[in-house]
Length: 545
Image (cartoon, rainbow, N blue to C red; front, top):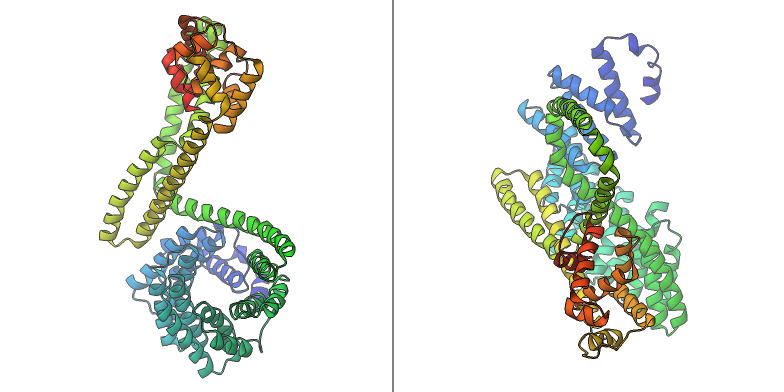
């Protein structure tokens, strides 16, 4: 089909728009059919726009489906799901009965739900795909539908349901005498049986399933064989298959194989080999986790930005006009102000720039530290309450896509709070360790001493600085980022503030007056923050770093 369409490339530009758009739709279909990855949405969106404007109910659902396929390739799951749902809505509104297209739509939605880990939605759309294929009497697709439903139940630990659907899929494959499909199911179902401890049944399925297997199916087969032998305590055979699994290009298979080989070596008393294999496991696991972390963030970002993108897209034109007007007004006012205050501005320019730069530095540090603060926890709690309220409304409105979006956001914020609380607990323990150190006790002893002649050595200050930096994650570095020209006296005062020494005690330690200490702290606040403030504000700022 793609070759035939290629012969029209030179002449299609002279055809009417109706012909050109249908030709473009055929091109998109042909690329999708041969698994050519869509890299841009411009072509398919122009097709959707045309058929929507023409109210062409025949081609619009198909165009919407391929828009969904395009956004799936672009890793934008929410927009892909949106276009799939639009296609379904058009078909329902126009009472169209294209079961072939509906089957593909529901199947693709199931794939995206599985990718987004929205397991509650999975069985519903997969059953709809199954119903369509049942009407079409498409036996091969029925096998995949049943298998996918089984997978969805396995993902949420509903073992009985998963078992039933896997066995039903195998029965249909046997009924249509498709050995390739049947053996593929045997190999996958065997892994499920091993998890349930049905080792004899799993082994029998693996032996049948290995008769028709391609290169892509080998790593999972080796993994299941290895797990079978490992679970039945036949370690040499398990090691043989784990080593064969290492040939795979999959980081997941390599990481798992190395970990299992390390366990086997340890159980056999070869700890040196176990340690070497474990190092390989950690190497591949770290690489795998980096990939998973990136994919997870992409999922969250896509879900989070979906509704925002929708609203912004609707208001884009009006906002652009408003922005230009405000820009013009702002530039005009700025010009007038600059002309009026030219002399004053010239005099204070450098001072203001320095202060603004200082404020920006402090703001960046405070925003970074806020991620682990109690303030962030409280903000997150308020956001969770707001999301909970929105979730209730989404449930009432039966807006499943919006509900899932809100649910993912809520779960992520709850995870962030748990992470912050864990970090705070670790910090409290580290601070408790600081209060038990010899150098801390030494400074406290000098602070509480009535002997004015008791001096601290340079080495003592250096040791205190190292201990504070270790406790508060490079405190001195952050301090010098804000104020590179900080003096030794100012640095010493900051260290004393950080370990909770009072101004009176500072005067004792540094052999100075309380008024002098207060004056230095007040000036230090201005240098650190770029704004004037009190000595107490300086203490609060230093403690927050």
